[in-house]
Image (tube, rainbow, N blue to C red):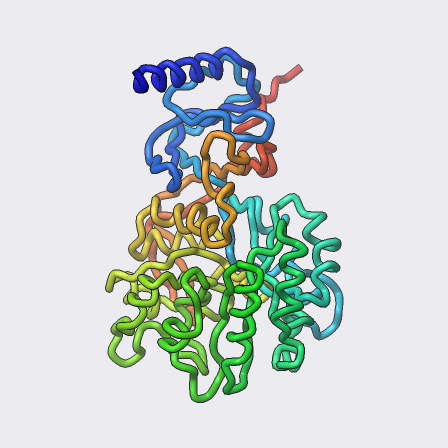
Length: 413
């Protein structure tokens, strides 16, 4: 009886969808949705900014706009977990309302990114300014990890000031702006103390949000094993996973080429390993051996700023393309760029195509050919596949359409 009722309801829902007028139908694309275990050719119907239905052979009869996605991948809007977007004109303030940060809309939507996370640009002293100046004015959904430093990621002496690292005030600001603040960031500290990490963890505990650690620059380096197994909590994030910088142990031993044995244990414990490519934090001689030894990042991100966008990093799609060429499958890369980061930041309404979810959608093409991908040392890795974004929807609205998939054909008069 229960099975019959469910089946009848399903049939009734399908009939209702086919009968009603709806905004947009993406037809015949290869849908990848990690949350709902979809990896197949399906249609996606959208109405009033939300996902209406994902199914085979939805009738186009009542769709206002039909997109032919045959040969393309249809995925949730990408989530870039590590970016820098508190752009402004303050002199000598690095990524806190200064010139090195970037406005998100110019670099996200054209790459299929509908949600971007600024990590640490603002602290409790200047988050309101960041919100008013950038968050509230962006088409891209812009979230934030608030810096444990009150002045934010202003560089230099600002980020060495232990007196400005206040866990209570940071947590208070995070709790005041729960819609926008999804984590706490700690970075760029050169001293021998663990104090910045400990205060960031305390702020995260008080606000019930994860922390992200940009770790290193101490001599001798702090042990990564201590960070992962003693200092961080399950769900906290280690970014720049495949970097090898002065003052930080690499995850792949430089001399032996072997993955450090505690890395897998840390991932199993629940530590999140984020790519955070950037202008100085992605090396093929770290990433390729790690993947060959069975280690894969939890999340893929760019570390977007003026120092990375025109170097080896380029864009979210370029970083994703590197991983489908060095050992991850397309579904794994899509999951690490959609559903997994949504879970990490506890925004599980994002990163999926569930019925009723916000209609953030990226339609991607994978080109086949001969391509070159560059790391931060300037080494080129030859690849045969490369992502390109054809169409981006944000809450059901077309915000990027490379080849006019949603547009009518021109007719001469």
